[in-house]
Amino acid sequence: MSALPLEDVGEDAAITGDARGEATRQRILDAAEKLFSEHGSNGVSLRAITAEAGANSAAANYHFGSKTGLLEAVFARHATGIAEERDAMLRTCKAAPGRPPLLEQIVRAFLEPGMRGQHGGTGFARFRGRLLAENTEHTRDLYARYFNASTGHFVAALKTALPDLPAHDLHWRFHVLLGAMVYTLANPGRIQILTDGACDPSDPDQALDNLVPMLAQMFRNPAMPMNGTPDSNTKISTTQA
Image (cartoon, rainbow, N blue to C red; front, side, top):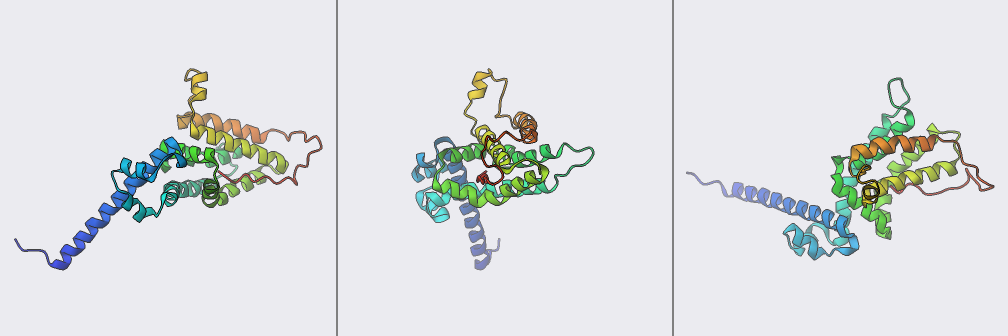
Protein backbone atom coordinates (compact mmCIF):
# COMPACT_ATOMS: atom_id res chain seq x y z
CA MET A 1 0.00 0.00 0.00
CA SER A 2 1.48 3.36 -1.02
CA ALA A 3 1.98 6.03 1.59
CA LEU A 4 0.16 9.36 1.43
CA PRO A 5 2.31 12.33 0.41
CA LEU A 6 3.59 14.19 3.44
CA GLU A 7 1.67 17.35 2.57
CA ASP A 8 -1.62 15.35 2.46
CA VAL A 9 -0.89 13.80 5.83
CA GLY A 10 -0.28 17.27 7.26
CA GLU A 11 -3.52 18.60 5.80
CA ASP A 12 -5.54 15.66 7.14
CA ALA A 13 -3.96 16.11 10.56
CA ALA A 14 -4.84 19.81 10.53
CA ILE A 15 -8.45 19.04 9.62
CA THR A 16 -8.67 16.43 12.36
CA GLY A 17 -7.15 18.88 14.82
CA ASP A 18 -9.62 21.61 13.83
CA ALA A 19 -12.56 19.24 14.23
CA ARG A 20 -11.30 18.10 17.61
CA GLY A 21 -10.86 21.72 18.71
CA GLU A 22 -14.38 22.64 17.59
CA ALA A 23 -15.82 19.60 19.40
CA THR A 24 -14.05 20.72 22.58
CA ARG A 25 -15.37 24.25 22.12
CA GLN A 26 -18.95 22.98 21.77
CA ARG A 27 -18.60 20.77 24.86
CA ILE A 28 -17.43 23.74 26.88
CA LEU A 29 -20.34 25.86 25.60
CA ASP A 30 -22.85 23.12 26.43
CA ALA A 31 -21.41 22.63 29.91
CA ALA A 32 -21.35 26.37 30.59
CA GLU A 33 -24.96 26.80 29.47
CA LYS A 34 -26.07 23.95 31.75
CA LEU A 35 -24.18 25.17 34.81
CA PHE A 36 -24.94 28.86 34.29
CA SER A 37 -28.65 28.04 34.01
CA GLU A 38 -28.54 26.00 37.22
CA HIS A 39 -26.30 28.21 39.37
CA GLY A 40 -26.07 31.62 37.71
CA SER A 41 -23.02 33.21 36.17
CA ASN A 42 -21.53 34.08 39.56
CA GLY A 43 -22.15 30.65 41.05
CA VAL A 44 -19.94 28.67 38.67
CA SER A 45 -16.17 28.71 38.25
CA LEU A 46 -14.36 28.18 34.97
CA ARG A 47 -12.77 25.11 36.56
CA ALA A 48 -16.21 23.61 37.25
CA ILE A 49 -17.27 24.25 33.66
CA THR A 50 -14.20 22.62 32.14
CA ALA A 51 -14.55 19.65 34.49
CA GLU A 52 -18.18 19.23 33.34
CA ALA A 53 -17.02 19.44 29.71
CA GLY A 54 -14.13 17.02 30.16
CA ALA A 55 -11.73 19.74 29.04
CA ASN A 56 -9.04 21.82 30.68
CA SER A 57 -8.79 25.49 31.60
CA ALA A 58 -6.21 26.09 28.86
CA ALA A 59 -8.76 25.04 26.22
CA ALA A 60 -11.40 27.36 27.70
CA ASN A 61 -8.97 30.27 27.78
CA TYR A 62 -7.86 29.53 24.21
CA HIS A 63 -11.41 29.51 22.82
CA PHE A 64 -13.06 32.19 24.98
CA GLY A 65 -10.37 34.18 26.75
CA SER A 66 -12.13 34.32 30.12
CA LYS A 67 -15.30 33.29 31.91
CA THR A 68 -16.86 36.58 30.79
CA GLY A 69 -16.02 35.74 27.18
CA LEU A 70 -17.49 32.27 27.63
CA LEU A 71 -20.70 33.72 29.10
CA GLU A 72 -21.12 35.96 26.07
CA ALA A 73 -20.39 33.09 23.66
CA VAL A 74 -23.09 30.97 25.32
CA PHE A 75 -25.53 33.86 25.05
CA ALA A 76 -24.65 34.84 21.49
CA ARG A 77 -24.93 31.39 19.88
CA HIS A 78 -28.71 31.34 20.46
CA ALA A 79 -29.66 35.01 21.07
CA THR A 80 -28.73 36.02 17.53
CA GLY A 81 -31.06 33.37 16.10
CA ILE A 82 -33.92 34.42 18.40
CA ALA A 83 -33.63 38.07 17.37
CA GLU A 84 -33.43 37.18 13.68
CA GLU A 85 -36.44 34.86 13.84
CA ARG A 86 -38.44 37.44 15.75
CA ASP A 87 -37.79 40.04 13.07
CA ALA A 88 -38.59 37.54 10.30
CA MET A 89 -41.90 36.63 11.94
CA LEU A 90 -42.73 40.29 12.58
CA ARG A 91 -42.29 41.07 8.88
CA THR A 92 -45.03 38.55 8.07
CA CYS A 93 -47.54 40.07 10.51
CA LYS A 94 -50.45 41.73 8.78
CA ALA A 95 -54.17 42.16 9.18
CA ALA A 96 -55.82 39.97 6.53
CA PRO A 97 -58.80 37.62 6.18
CA GLY A 98 -58.09 34.12 7.45
CA ARG A 99 -55.25 35.22 9.69
CA PRO A 100 -55.28 35.65 13.50
CA PRO A 101 -55.88 39.20 14.75
CA LEU A 102 -52.86 41.44 14.23
CA LEU A 103 -52.08 41.86 17.93
CA GLU A 104 -52.01 38.10 18.44
CA GLN A 105 -49.62 37.79 15.50
CA ILE A 106 -47.26 40.42 16.93
CA VAL A 107 -47.25 38.95 20.44
CA ARG A 108 -46.64 35.43 19.13
CA ALA A 109 -43.83 36.65 16.87
CA PHE A 110 -42.12 38.12 19.92
CA LEU A 111 -42.59 35.16 22.26
CA GLU A 112 -42.39 32.04 20.10
CA PRO A 113 -38.76 32.14 18.87
CA GLY A 114 -37.40 32.15 22.42
CA MET A 115 -39.93 29.75 23.94
CA ARG A 116 -39.82 26.90 21.46
CA GLY A 117 -36.87 24.60 20.92
CA GLN A 118 -35.23 26.01 17.79
CA HIS A 119 -32.72 28.17 19.69
CA GLY A 120 -31.27 26.21 22.56
CA GLY A 121 -34.47 24.67 23.88
CA THR A 122 -35.38 24.68 27.55
CA GLY A 123 -31.73 24.83 28.61
CA PHE A 124 -31.16 28.20 26.96
CA ALA A 125 -34.57 29.40 28.12
CA ARG A 126 -33.57 28.73 31.74
CA PHE A 127 -30.19 30.36 31.07
CA ARG A 128 -31.89 33.54 29.81
CA GLY A 129 -34.25 33.59 32.77
CA ARG A 130 -31.35 33.22 35.18
CA LEU A 131 -29.39 36.06 33.56
CA LEU A 132 -32.37 38.39 33.68
CA ALA A 133 -32.90 37.60 37.35
CA GLU A 134 -29.23 38.39 38.10
CA ASN A 135 -29.60 41.84 36.50
CA THR A 136 -25.89 42.69 36.49
CA GLU A 137 -24.28 45.39 34.38
CA HIS A 138 -22.78 42.72 32.12
CA THR A 139 -26.06 40.85 31.59
CA ARG A 140 -27.89 44.12 30.90
CA ASP A 141 -25.23 44.93 28.32
CA LEU A 142 -25.64 41.51 26.68
CA TYR A 143 -29.40 41.93 26.39
CA ALA A 144 -29.01 45.45 25.06
CA ARG A 145 -26.50 44.48 22.36
CA TYR A 146 -28.27 41.35 21.18
CA PHE A 147 -31.94 42.25 21.63
CA ASN A 148 -32.51 46.02 21.77
CA ALA A 149 -32.82 46.55 18.03
CA SER A 150 -35.22 43.65 17.50
CA THR A 151 -37.33 44.45 20.56
CA GLY A 152 -37.54 48.07 19.48
CA HIS A 153 -39.14 46.90 16.24
CA PHE A 154 -41.90 45.23 18.26
CA VAL A 155 -42.56 48.31 20.39
CA ALA A 156 -42.87 50.30 17.15
CA ALA A 157 -45.19 47.69 15.61
CA LEU A 158 -47.45 47.79 18.67
CA LYS A 159 -47.56 51.59 18.53
CA THR A 160 -48.63 51.39 14.90
CA ALA A 161 -51.27 48.74 15.66
CA LEU A 162 -52.59 50.73 18.64
CA PRO A 163 -52.47 54.39 17.53
CA ASP A 164 -54.93 55.54 20.22
CA LEU A 165 -53.13 53.89 23.15
CA PRO A 166 -50.99 56.37 25.10
CA ALA A 167 -47.27 55.60 25.19
CA HIS A 168 -47.37 55.30 28.99
CA ASP A 169 -49.91 52.47 28.75
CA LEU A 170 -48.08 50.79 25.90
CA HIS A 171 -44.79 50.81 27.78
CA TRP A 172 -46.25 49.35 30.97
CA ARG A 173 -48.14 46.70 29.06
CA PHE A 174 -44.94 45.75 27.26
CA HIS A 175 -43.30 45.56 30.67
CA VAL A 176 -45.98 43.05 31.72
CA LEU A 177 -45.30 41.04 28.54
CA LEU A 178 -41.60 40.94 29.39
CA GLY A 179 -42.37 39.89 32.96
CA ALA A 180 -44.64 37.06 31.82
CA MET A 181 -42.01 35.87 29.35
CA VAL A 182 -39.13 35.99 31.86
CA TYR A 183 -41.08 34.22 34.62
CA THR A 184 -42.19 31.56 32.16
CA LEU A 185 -38.60 31.05 30.98
CA ALA A 186 -37.29 30.87 34.55
CA ASN A 187 -39.98 28.28 35.35
CA PRO A 188 -39.61 28.29 39.16
CA GLY A 189 -42.44 25.75 39.46
CA ARG A 190 -44.71 27.83 41.68
CA ILE A 191 -47.80 27.72 39.46
CA GLN A 192 -47.43 23.97 38.94
CA ILE A 193 -47.50 23.51 42.72
CA LEU A 194 -50.42 25.88 43.23
CA THR A 195 -52.51 24.21 40.49
CA ASP A 196 -51.44 20.61 41.08
CA GLY A 197 -49.86 20.62 37.63
CA ALA A 198 -52.94 21.86 35.77
CA CYS A 199 -51.03 24.93 34.62
CA ASP A 200 -47.63 23.95 33.26
CA PRO A 201 -45.64 26.81 31.65
CA SER A 202 -42.75 24.42 31.00
CA ASP A 203 -44.81 23.11 28.06
CA PRO A 204 -44.13 25.75 25.36
CA ASP A 205 -47.30 24.92 23.43
CA GLN A 206 -49.47 25.36 26.52
CA ALA A 207 -47.59 28.52 27.49
CA LEU A 208 -47.94 30.14 24.06
CA ASP A 209 -51.55 29.09 23.55
CA ASN A 210 -52.48 30.83 26.81
CA LEU A 211 -50.08 33.76 26.96
CA VAL A 212 -50.60 35.00 23.40
CA PRO A 213 -54.37 35.71 23.59
CA MET A 214 -54.15 36.97 27.19
CA LEU A 215 -51.36 39.42 26.44
CA ALA A 216 -52.95 40.52 23.16
CA GLN A 217 -56.18 41.28 25.03
CA MET A 218 -54.20 43.26 27.60
CA PHE A 219 -52.80 45.47 24.81
CA ARG A 220 -56.27 45.76 23.29
CA ASN A 221 -57.91 47.06 26.49
CA PRO A 222 -58.76 50.78 26.80
CA ALA A 223 -56.21 53.18 28.25
CA MET A 224 -56.02 53.38 32.04
CA PRO A 225 -57.06 56.61 33.81
CA MET A 226 -53.88 58.51 34.52
CA ASN A 227 -54.92 60.54 37.62
CA GLY A 228 -52.87 63.48 36.43
CA THR A 229 -49.75 61.46 35.57
CA PRO A 230 -48.17 62.38 32.20
CA ASP A 231 -48.83 59.75 29.56
CA SER A 232 -47.37 60.10 26.10
CA ASN A 233 -44.46 62.18 27.36
CA THR A 234 -43.36 59.42 29.73
CA LYS A 235 -40.47 57.43 28.33
CA ILE A 236 -39.74 54.04 29.84
CA SER A 237 -37.00 51.79 28.48
CA THR A 238 -38.68 48.49 27.67
CA THR A 239 -36.33 47.12 25.03
CA GLN A 240 -34.49 44.67 27.27
CA ALA A 241 -35.90 41.35 26.24
